[in-house]
Length: 203
Image (cartoon, rainbow, N blue to C red; front, side, top):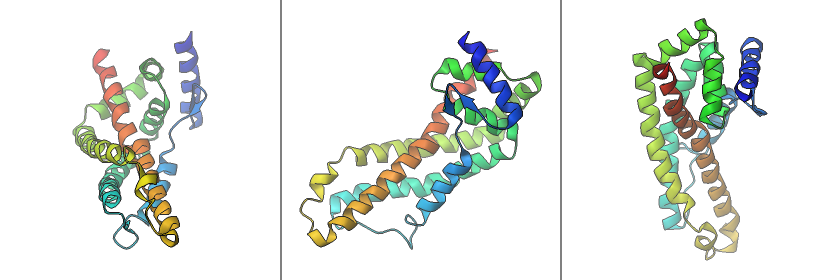
């Protein structure tokens, strides 16, 4: 019954151009790209501000490097999806779905023509190249972000002069936003791809 309801919701969303799966809105690639653009302003050579705490800065710089590498990879991926609405709707919906069962229900709800579009893309050299890039970027992002998140940043900035404390707090917040971006984009997209790539071969 659940699969049937999901299929009905997805079939309607493919026609309307928007999607709501299991009460959760589909991923918005445009919103995520806008977030990336805003973060880039404080992450590039001109905008990046280093921390005065050396150990903290090493971790922040690693996350910043991962962000700068991941952003163009993710944008190329979304460029491809946005250029073909059926692909964009499908990937956005499956990425928002929480379980493999929900993702599979979305695939099964596709019309034969839509399945052909999705299957042809998944089997293409373009998809292989893009997903390889996503995988490499996701691996680096996970490693660098995990290292930063394991730090006790409150303790690390406890010795900073009061006049610099707010600035250091803002830098940490920026890095947290970068970590969130990486998780919501590169990491999420690659994890979703690993699951849905099996659907065609399982048919």
